[in-house]
Image 1 (cartoon, rainbow, N blue to C red):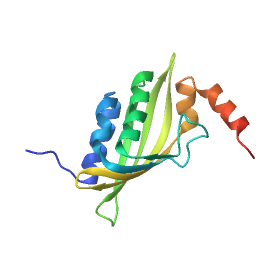
Image 2: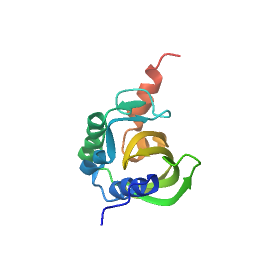
Image 3: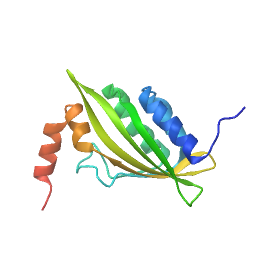
Length: 148
């Protein structure tokens, strides 16, 4: 029996793949011309605010794989919308950071068509993610260099 292809099912596969660290498989959930908006991403090349195309998204996930990132996904709430292609997901990432585990809040708005993500708006807590992954100094430098 084929896997369900609705927005909720696709989000569940995405979050399960993130939790299991299957970074190299995640881009296959996106359409070839998918667009991922990250409006809260900090300045700089490490977290671009716009990713266009499956292969650009694949490269972003490959970067996460190289870093050895492990995110626990919990407190997931998926909201159905009046648009049958769109779901809004609220969830937390638990990220190991040395002796502690940090929690980063997230909201994603996904548009899924024909079983593939065609557009997403990702509102992640980039500050906590940077702290957990040792990127806080680079983030502070990027912010200090950004024009006012």
